Amino acid sequence: MKYHRLFPLMIALLTLVMASSCDHIDNKAIPRFTVRIDLGGYAMWNIYGVNGMGDYRIFNREKGIPANFPYNVNTYTGYGGVLLMMGIDAPMAYDLSCPVEASQDITLSIDNDNFEAVCPKCKSRYNPLTGAGGPVSGVAINNKVGMRAYHVTPSNGGYFISN
Image (cartoon, rainbow, N blue to C red; front, side):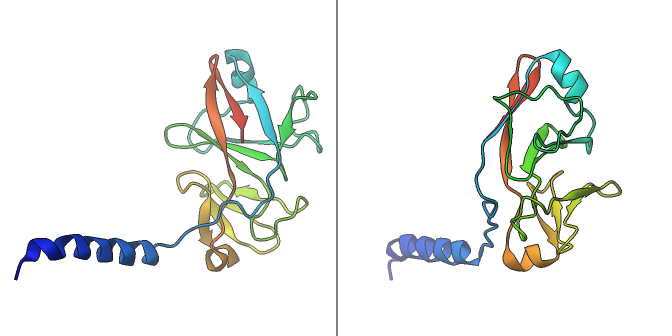
């Protein structure tokens, strides 16, 4: 029997099995709202940015968080606010709303012991530090939902956050 003819079929079958067994995490459970936070420049980043691994800041224009941030008409903070957290190598940003609850009023808080994002209502936990906002425990694992991630782009010695 000529095995070289079966090889492409075996590869196709293996690829199909592997693709169907992968768990896909939905990181778009939160409605898409505009995000635009300009922390470009050394001065803005030094005041409002994050530096060491696990360091984080919350931005919510409607609630005035942080209180002294110079919000303007071109600043948008997503659906439930923006979590900016320093990861292992670079800063990362996520929407602050719980993906299970999908409500602007139910926002995640950070457990400072392990840097996980925690929902006060459904108790789901997420990994914004190294897990791309994926679920760690709770209903979020069963629902296969993760935090909505935003782009963090270098800009003049600081960063620009957008979607």
